[in-house]
Length: 320
Length: 320
Image 1: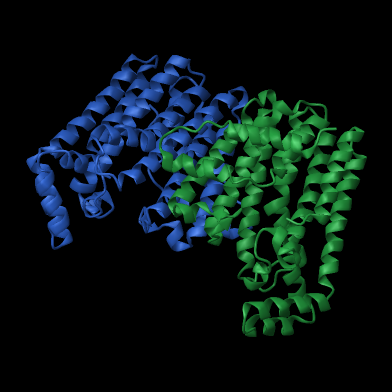
Image 2: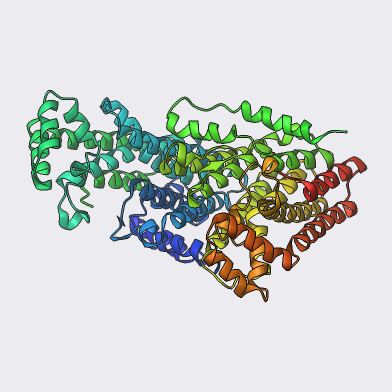
C-alpha cells in the first residue's frame, strides 16, 4: 500500500525540480528559501493521495499539489510579516532574513506561481479548479482578518473561533482533498465527501496545534511551549477560560503575573481547574471521528479509506 | 465614434457594481476604498476598446477589464507599502489610513479577486487568458524588484532602466490590449500587434511620468514637483546625468545642496546643460511613433486605428 512518504517524496522531488530565473535574485531567492524550509507537506500529500485513491494517477496532479503547497507557503510568508514572527521552521523568516518589501513581493510572486501551477495540465477541469482555488484563497484571507480582529475583541465566542480556524486553516485542507479528487475524475459526491473530510481534519489539526502550544513536549514540538499564553493569543483554550466563571481570576493572572513562567503556570492552573485540556482533546477526537465517518460513507476503495483514516487518527496523537 | 469616456463609464459602472461581503470589514473596506480612488482607468479602457475594435462586444470583456484594473490597483497598494508612500490620488494610502497588515492582506485579496475576474466568462479562452495574466504578473514583480535593486546600484544603464519600466509598467498595458483582442476574437497577429502597441505606449507613458515629476505644472500634475530629484529616484533623467561627464558635479549638487529647493534647481540646471528635457521628449515621441506605426500596419478598421492613435498622441502632451 502507498504510504504518506511515497506522496511526500513525489512532492519534494517536484519542489526541487522547480526552475527559477537567475534574475532578479532578490525576488526568486526568498521563494526558493521558503519552499526548501520543509514542513509536513500535508496538503500536497492529501491532494496526491485523494487523486490516487479515487482512481486517478497522482503524477497527473503534481502541478496542482505544487500549487497548493506554494499557496500555503505564501500565506505563511505574509502572515509572518503581519504577525512580526522571527522564526519559522527553525530558520529566520523571510522578512527577518531579508526585509519587509522582499517578503511582500516574493509572497505576491508565490501566489501568482501557485495559480499557474494549479491550472497547469488541468485540461477541461481548469474552470472548476481555478474557481475552487480562488474561492478557498478568499476564505483564507477572511480567516486571517478575523484572527487579527480577534486580538482587539473581548467578545469572541467559541463558535466564532471555530469559524475562524475553519476559514484560516481547514478550507485549504478541504480544497487540497477536493482538488485531488477532481483531478482524479471523482464524482461530485466523492469530491464533496473528501472536502468535508479535509474540513474536519483541518479543525482537528488546528486544535491540536493550539493544544501542543501549551501542553506539548518542547523537545518534539520544535518551538517554545507557552508562547500563546504569553502573547494572550485567543486560542480555543483561552476563549473558553475567558467565557467561564473564572474570567476575573484569569484577568488577574494575565495582568499581574510577575514573570513569564508565573503567567504560563497561572493560566494553566485555570485551564486545569476548568478541565479544558481534556475537553480540548475530546473535541479533537470528535472532529477526527467526523472525518473518519465521512470517509467510511464515501465511494472509496478499502486502501483509500485506510490511508485517510490513518492520517486522521495520527492527528489525535501528533506531537509536532 | 466611441470615445474614451464611453469605455471609462463602462468600467466605472462595473466597479460600482462590485458586491463586497459585509464581513470581515477590515478586509473588504480597503479594497472598496482603493478602487473608488479613481485614476485614469487607462488599462481597462484599452482592454474594452481593443475588444470592440477587433470586432467583439466590449460588454463581453468587462470582467477581464475589471480584473486588470483590480490587479493594477493591487500592485499600487503593495508598492505603496514597500515605498512607504503616504499619499495616493490625493488620499492617504491604505497602510497609512489602516496599517501595514491591512494593506498586505487586502492586496492579496485583490490579486485573487483580479484572477477571478479575468477568467470569468472567458469560456474556451480561459487557458490563454490566465496564462497571459500570470506571465504578465510575474514580469511586473520582476520590474518592481529591479526598481528596488536600482536604489542601491551605481551602475544602472539607460538600457537597464528601459527594461525595468518595460516590466514594471508596459507589460500590463500590453497585456490589457492583448486580452481585449483575445476576448474580441482577434487573430494571433492582431493580438501581438496590440500587445506591441501597448508596450510602446507604456514606455512613453512612464517616461512622460518621469518628465512631469520634474517639469510638470504643480497645478495640473496633482503632486509636488521635484519629488524624484529630492529622493534620488533613479529615473531616465538622473541615470543619463549620472552616466554623463557631469556626474562629478551632479554628485556634489546631490550631496551638498543646503535646501530641497537648491537641490532641485541644481539638478535641473545639470539636466538643462545636458539637454535632457528635450532628449526625453524626443524619446517619448519616438515610442509614441512606434506605437502608431504598429497600429497602422495592424488589421484594424479606420475608427480603431484613429482611437488608438489618439490615445498614443495624447501621451506626448499629457500633463497629469
